[in-house]
Amino acid sequence: MEKEGNVFLGILAIMLGLLAIIIPLFSVYIATVIAGIGILFLGIWLLIQSFAFWEGGKGSTIAYLTIGIFVIIVGIVLFGNILAFSFLISIWFYITGFLLILSGIMSLFTKAGILGKVSCILGIIFGIIYVVLASYAWNPLYLALLIGIWLIIDGVALFFINPSEMLKWM
Image (cartoon, helix red, strand yellow):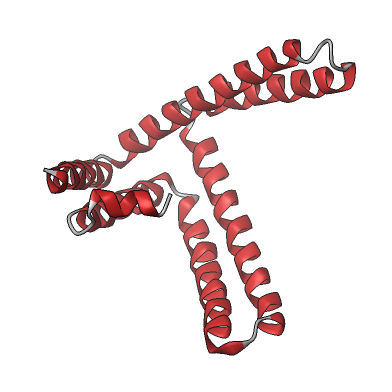
C-alpha cells in the first residue's frame, strides 16, 4: 500500500514534466501565477505581523510593514509575468552557483580527508552547473524544459523510494 503512493506521485510528476516540456510557456505562466500568489500571501502575512508587533516596538512594526509592502509589490509584479519570473530564477541560480563555488574553494583549504576534499570538489562542480543553468533560465522556454526534466527525473526516482524512507530525511 505504501508503494502505491509513490507510484501515483511518480506518474503525476512525470505527466507534469511532460506537460511542462510540451507546452512550456503555459507551464512557466502557471508557475509565475503560483509564485506570485504565494509571495502576495507572504506580504499580507507580514503586514498582519506588523500590526501584531505594534505594542512591542515601533521599529519592528515599521520593518515588518516596509518588508510586507515590498513583498506585496513583488508578488503583484511577479503574478503572471514570465520574464520577471525567468529573471528572478536566473539570478537565483547565479547567486547559488557562485556561493557553491566560493564555499567549495574555501572548504578545500579547511576540510581534511579524502571525503572532505571530494565534497568540496562536488560543491564546485554543482556551483558551475548552477551557473550554466542560470544562463539557460533567462529564456522561459529553457526554464520550462529544465522544470520538465527535473519533474520527470523526480517522478522516476519516486518509483524507487519507499515513502517511509522519505520521512527519515526530513
